[in-house]
Image 1 (cartoon, rainbow, N blue to C red):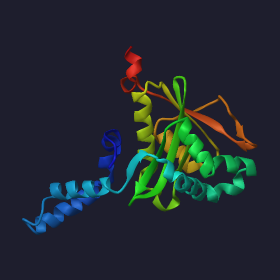
Image 2 (cartoon, rainbow, N blue to C red):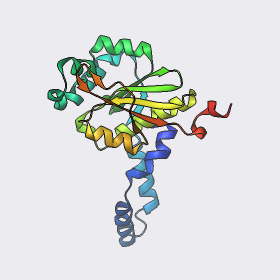
Image 3 (cartoon, one colour):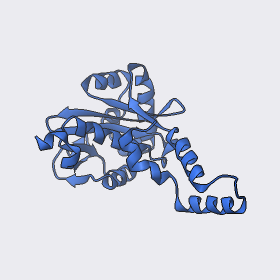
Image 4 (cartoon, rainbow, N blue to C red):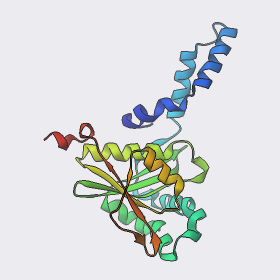
Length: 213
């Protein structure tokens, strides 16, 4: 199931106005069959159960490494060899990341289809290792992962979310911008020769319990 924060933000967007209108016509043609409201509720329940976001466990390190490798494979030629290796850490390095900060997985039918990690650095919460399998892109898995991170960061008193990305990951950049991230001039500016730039999102005071203290 989705977290409460993710459901409030993204759950209703699964149902389009066209779908509701279509079902309303079906219901009108067959009175007593079911109401549009009941259809919407059942559809939302079905969609809600499709993706689960939770903290990763040690036994999933290998699956997480595979998701990262598969997700970035199409861009490998645009990275330096060292940059690609750093972007797609192996199982041992995933386990090390688990000891450095929280790491989440997105599950669909109990299979790991997405992942993201983060590490605290003072008031900032640095996002790293975010990936979604190509087969499930377009299903809002990335949005759900980001919503989970933002909620975690706010609860733990962080003031900003930060990440580094490469200019050629246009799909990911659009997602970050949609989620409220803005480009920053601060470094790092490369990853073993692969160009990088930083994106920052300032958490709103209402989301940050520490801001009122």
